Length: 84
Image 1 (cartoon, one colour):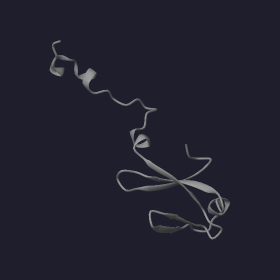
Image 2: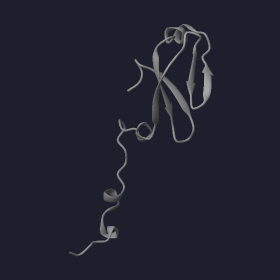
Image 3: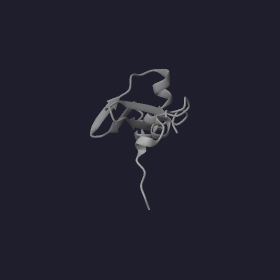
Image 4: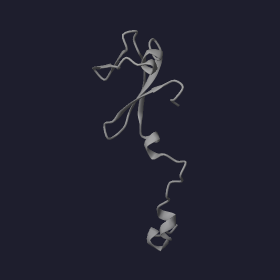
């Protein structure tokens, strides 16, 4: 069996661009589910996050949320209606 070099292939075969609906970040995110306490706090990665009292945050009290950590260090908190 003889192997071919990829140099002979057209560049479009070697590198496919992502379609508009594809999100590379979504595949590289670390998700963990946490519960927001009645005092609007949640614990993640040895840290306690205190949510600012607002109608949105108060609606999350005693509910599960997804904490998403991206490779660049950003954190995102998603409610069950936003996540997955």
